[in-house]
Length: 245
Picture 1 (cartoon, rainbow, N blue to C red):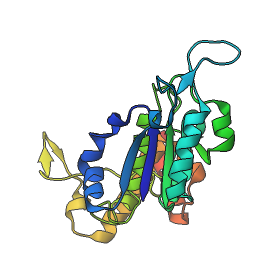
Picture 2 (tube, one colour; picture 1 turned 180 degrees about the vertical axis):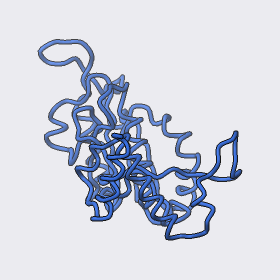
Picture 3 (spheres, rainbow, N blue to C red; picture 1 turned 180 degrees about the horizontal axis):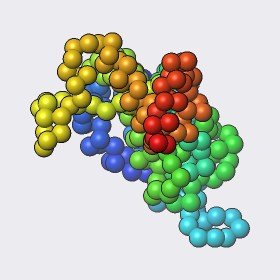
Picture 4 (spheres, rainbow, N blue to C red; picture 1 turned 45 degrees about the horizontal axis):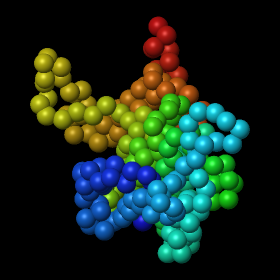
């Protein structure tokens, strides 16, 4: 998978892409991230990429011409790559998007600044628009990094275990169950006995119940989008009664 990023600040991607899972995956060739300076496609003495908005108002708007030229050049090498716009107006990015986008041969991220992009960029160049939350950031670079990280976890060879992504929160639509490691007792708090039992069936049942409980307590709206088994529903009803009592 090749991630191309168009940004005015390509240096922001240097350190995150050298560390941890992403850094290892890049070294191993499981993915490639190329951060391009949008000014490389700008023209004029000052390589201008923004201008004042028509109609007046504060701030500056990113011009369409440099972006058009940049996307056209990147598309010459990867004609099927999808163009993704980072914007607060986009659809909320979720785990299913990460899974779906991991199936693409390549992705091009447009990272805005100032008051955003000329509307004609949206109309002619963009395949999808994404937001990572209902808050305002200074640019699209951090959202792009978040999305690249989430998407990369679904690529073959990126995680040490193929099961890791399947047990993450949201992998099946629910929050993850609690995790424990050594020591068995810490500050008077003990690991649940079932996890020390060696009974894999009981452990699996406990973990599923904990998933349902944690989701019920913290993100109950997630149940609207999850396919539950009859057994899940029975456990959920019992948990609801216990919480109410």
